[in-house]
Length: 170
Image 1 (tube, rainbow, N blue to C red):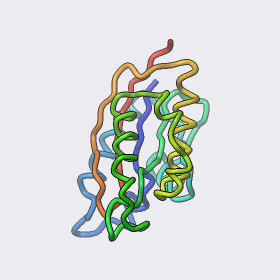
Image 2 (cartoon, helix red, strand yellow; image 1 turned 180 degrees about the horizontal axis):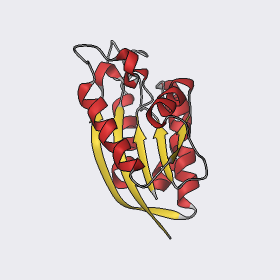
Image 3 (cartoon, one colour; image 1 turned 120 degrees about the horizontal axis):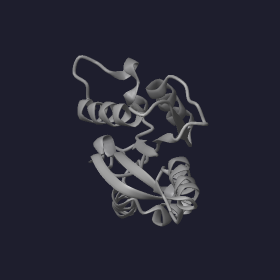
């Protein structure tokens, strides 16, 4: 089974692209990762927010919950800078570093144990809850055999990752 985590940002929708795309690198990383994910056929999509669901629907053109691949739309904090949607919170960098490390290592237990109260304060509540639920769900029957980080940055003060996981049964 394959799993891909992408940001739940509406900037990935075509109507937000422009002549000078402000998230061109992110958009390219997402396209590559989703292409890799769908090589083996249709996939299911998971999102913890309305914008995330719109991103999933756009990237997959609909979902089939019975298939083995999973696309997850989830951001980190939105409080990384003064101009971020939630303004600067000094705790955001540490929170995002911990989430990013868990994603990069495929540490399902670390994701399952995310501090959801802190996540909510850092404007990552729904997305962190989605990642925590994913960690709990996958840890029961699988492990991450290979992880690849395609994108890890916080443009506009919001943390985004594009991560690929190759799963295997335990």
